[in-house]
Length: 344
Image (tube, rainbow, N blue to C red; front, side, top):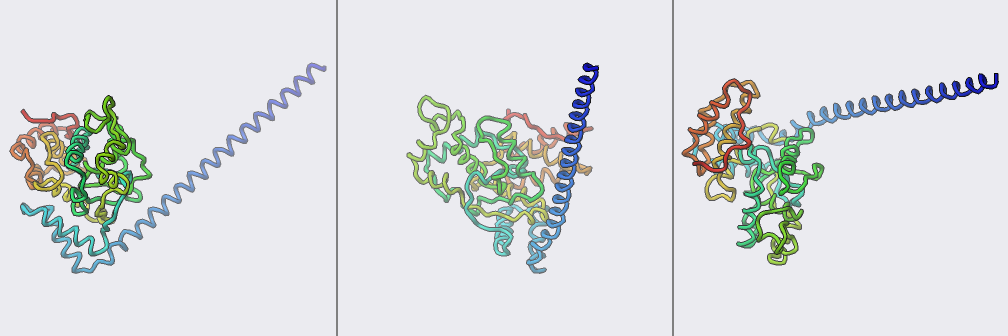
């Protein structure tokens, strides 16, 4: 009887413990459901608030301004006009005058890379570092990349296309710094090599460029480089002076980032002309976007737009288009992440 009583006591304690655990689980699940519900409602309200904000950001523009800007935008999208740079300069000036773009200094960690930069081709660490060597050897000057060339678009409040693209830099090589998403405020379409070089120096990234390192090391030495060039130290501390275009502009004119990026590649501009592989990648990415949206690929316009910037490999455009066509048959994409770096 004593044993039976002891057993009943243990059973009751176990049942009570099980009931308590189940109750806690139910409570936790209830809290999770409530939290997810709150997140859903907050997201829903945020989206609704943004829907209200978007038109108001553009409403300050007069009908005459909108008509004029729309005309320039259409010309830049569809025209064979060789004066692409002039078209873009006029459009950017109109945005600044209308308060839809602002000229400001931005600390380097706040600057990411826009997916439209260089036709959708990721920056290569080797190119960024070698450009940095040239800048260090010549001596840094803010005239290298002023706000007329350092152009960026604001991070969208809900879309993460700039953050996701920029984070791919740090995920594909150890020669870029790790990106802190919450720090990013803009995505660059001009001066991207220089901006990311400054980020690399700040982070002390690994590099194959010995002139950026102290003897016997393989990481960039910020202290050494600043000792050699105090002006570079100022740029590392305060960043570059950017023309920052509001996110609502990109939403209304989605091709504008790519148009500006293309203009930055024209000769006599600080951005490097597209390499053989970058040109092939640009053509493939443009075709992939059209395929993904269910459109028929407009190869003629892709080739025409590619030639507008007069890239160094302009003579290879037709061959690249034909190759992209062969890769696109029966597929929904034709991007070339691992294409060779030079022709021949």
